Amino acid sequence: MVHLYDIWKGLVKAGTREVRILTINTAATAGSVMELGKGTTLPVLQDSYEANVWGVWGAGKDATWVLDRNGYIRSYWSFLDFNTGQDTLIAAIQSALAL
Image (cartoon, rainbow, N blue to C red; front, side, top):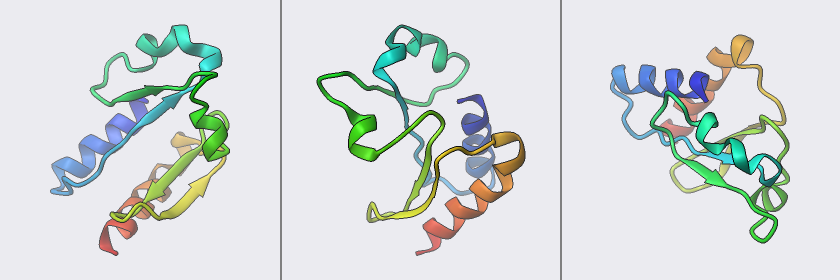
């Protein structure tokens, strides 16, 4: 989440204010939701066994989506290494916003 938060801050600082980031925490680690968002102001949606958000989206740990303004998926990574994929993610976000 810290990497996502840094990307968001950089985009906002550059004048791109339309970017929204949401993290979905798996039900299996429900107790860690406070730790997950520590040091950021990004929202965290808590998945549960009753409301299986991960299952609906077919997500796994560190799955990342970029959606355009209309909610269409423009990019997807089942695992995105933020140390090596940050530029790729930023380009995908900017591309989705241009649509």
